[in-house]
Image (cartoon, rainbow, N blue to C red; front, side, top):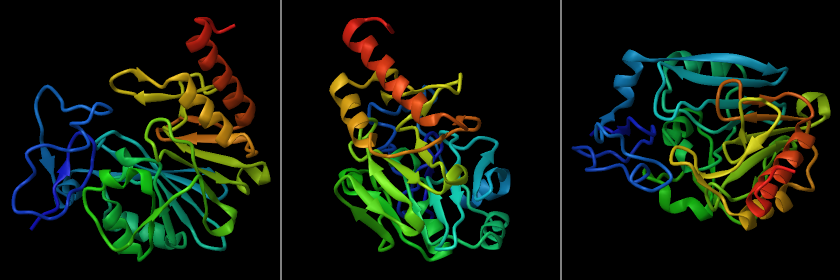
Length: 272
């Protein structure tokens, strides 16, 4: 039986004879069901109509995305390190070319995902590369295809190989997570932020939302909590979920200023 994939968000469901009546992820207020209605695809169909493309971002950091766009259109990031490669976030399409390229770069020893909108075909990736997927326990209910390779962690930090560390900031989702990579940017540190911290078009700030497509903001107390949880970590670059959503230097100061101006607008109605 096929494992159906939602066309709107890219989430893959457990195998069943017919697609679900609705996507649980898209029916929730952070996402949406399009006016044209719920529709589904499968991984086999995507492999016939789409392909993945790559970009090297740093000496040991690669971005992978799909064209034409699938679901939300995010990219995955591959961190290469001697202790084992980490795949940050996930995309729906996994094809033979992608498998060959990933293996040529050293494979994957762990997958970590920022929040449920990017769970996509994580089980397919885990099976192909025989590695665990690290998800925050607070978001367990959004898993639409369970598997023994899914590992649920709790608390606010989890250390992965090579010094990489998962930081639960919350915000967009209760388990919303970023990846701190201290060796990135030539040892100055890199933050892989998904859209828990959304890099905005000027590439000098980030922002924070409960729902991006529905324009629902986060309250001040939630943003302050995110600020507190991130405060102890040094980083120079920030790489977000989408193509060109990148702050390649001065990232820590940019994020600090972004917290300041967001809170100022919420609490005083001005950026000053």
